[in-house]
Amino acid sequence: MAVNLRPFRDYDEHDVIGCVISGQAVPVLTKGVVLYSGTVLGGQTVAAGDSLVVSGNGEIVRAPLTIGTHQVVGKALGAKSATTNHVLLKLEL
Image (tube, rainbow, N blue to C red; front, side):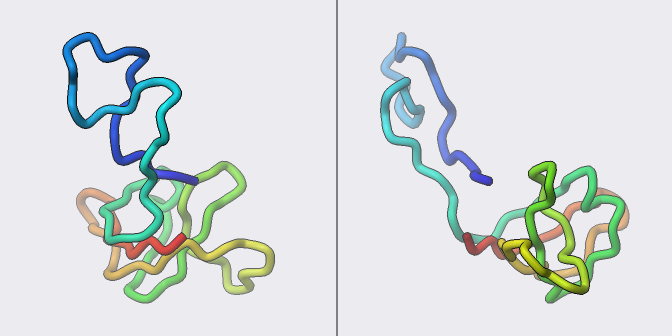
């Protein structure tokens, strides 16, 4: 799982600053606070302090009661919004 911090471009036709050209290193978010809304997480009940893991299909979801082999990728900082299904989470990869 990764969050790219800059958009990708095949070539830089106008000297665009702040993009990644093919072949360059890509800056990736590995920790921080983000607002997240995924399809699966939107259907779950999330509370502050809940551990979040990556599911088999690559989405961030609330950790099961027994984490087992799932890698915890962050914690929910608050409850899920009832109107937008967004969760403020602290990402720590």
